[in-house]
Image (tube, rainbow, N blue to C red; front, top):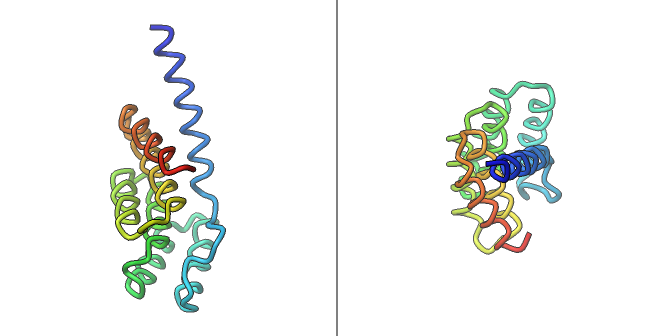
Amino acid sequence: MKQNLKSFWIFLWLAILVAGCAGVRPPAPVSDNAAVLALVDGVYVDVDAGRLPNAVAGLERALRMEPKNPRLWQELARVRMKEGDYTQAESLAARSNSWAGDNNDLRAENWRVISEARTARGDEAGARAALERAKQLGR
């Protein structure tokens, strides 16, 4: 019993660490399209100011321009996490993975978002499995 409790607290600490990383802006441009980049810049401003519905609207507009852009889907998943819509966040991160191709860094980060969403919903086993998938992708 004590070992299970210790494992739980270690897992929770790791989940909080991952959650802190989930808000980090991507290191590379999300798109080559200037209009999409302008929308995403506005999204970051909205997120920083706590205007999450505006951020969602901006990302949805960007996705209408580039519906197969996995980075935009990932950013939308992150905003949904901030809103507390964990089911939607997991679904959006999975959609990002469907467009990510062989971009293992992006896919690994999506699995981390999925893990965070599962943790928030109380699915400890699912969260561990998602973290394992991220690890398998080499990141």
